[in-house]
Image (cartoon, rainbow, N blue to C red):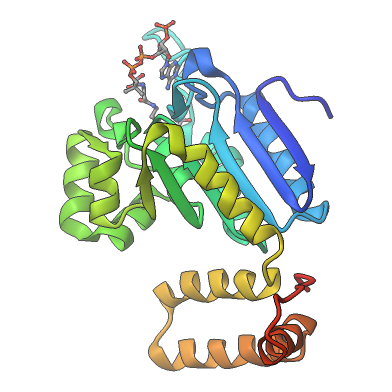
Length: 262
Ligand code: T3D
């Protein structure tokens, strides 16, 4: 498949996806959704061990392309539930289900569903000039694409409420200090750090990281007992795998490990 609205590459275990509608701040139309879905499937099935997601131009993603539908007074009402069910819900779940770390390099403004998509990634880096805007309240909508799930978990109810109800711009620095994201970096350092992490993860024990991701996300709905059971099950599976054996051998032999990711 050739892409019109994203850039995609997969080499050396690293899948890279760049949202590429810069004149619309990489907002989502139906075609970009379809291309992203296909690229995530190729990432999943093509032997990647890490996914790096970013945006082209001065923005990361401004959420839904508001020009992609007719909401004029004389037009038929739009079923936004259909858009969520068909596009945003599967997108968020597919990022979460990827059995590898997903890095998001937020290169500029992340607004509406664009912010939610960034926050659905596992390691979120942002350029100092980037910002996060819960733009939904300005349209009379709720934060979607997992926004109402991610925000309170990451920053607590008080800050989630303020962000979601006011729609103010949150700077990348503030996002880092509130724990919304992993790191804020100078603009000219963002992609170098994102690439450094991608290269690191491309030779890491991928299955162990996949189970780590699953266990941390599962903890939101689990009791301590359930979580202890889950950790036991993960550890049992991983302990039978080649990367655990290799990790221990490398430690004992004082050498760098060579992980298969299996
Ligand atoms: O299906 C459903 O609708 C339900 C799902 C909803 C999910 C959502 O994401 S709802 C939220 C949608 N997003 C927004 O409301 C954000 C709208 N954009 C903005 O508020 C601002 O553009 C930003 C704060 C993000 C950035 O502001 P600024 O001043 O840096 O840039 P700009 O001049 O506003 O935007 C640059 C261009 O991108 C401009 O086009 P132009 O005038 O140069 O031809 C602008 O219209 C376009 N653009 C930005 N965001 C969108 C967009 N075009 C369409 N849709 C957008 N979301």
